[in-house]
Amino acid sequence: MADVDSPTLRIIAGISPTRGSESDELRRWLGDALAELSLTYYREGSREGEEEALRIMARRLLAQTIAPRDLTSWAHRFITWDGTPLAAD
Image 1 (tube, rainbow, N blue to C red):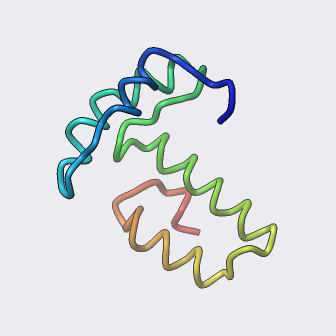
Image 2 (spheres, rainbow, N blue to C red):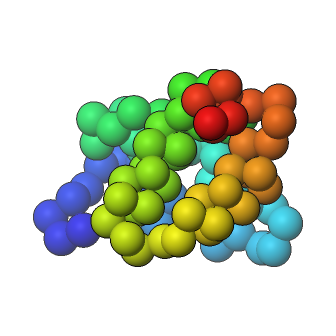
C-alpha cells in the first residue's frame, strides 16, 4: 500500500482495537476510508455485498485456488439460505 494515504486511513491506522470491539471503531470509519480510495463499500449483510463476495469466491474457484466444496462450504456459512439467490445454484 505504498503511496496510499487519506485522512481516514490515518485514523484507522491509529486504532488499536481490543478483541470484540473491532466492529465498533473500525467499522465506524470503513465506509469513509473506502470512499476516499474510490472503492465500493458494501454494508454488512447487504445483497450487493453478498453477490460481490460470491463473485470473488467464484473467481477463486475458476482459478483453482479453492475446491468446489470450499466454495459451497463458504456460501453455506456466510450467505446462508436466506441470502442472495445467486448463491443457491
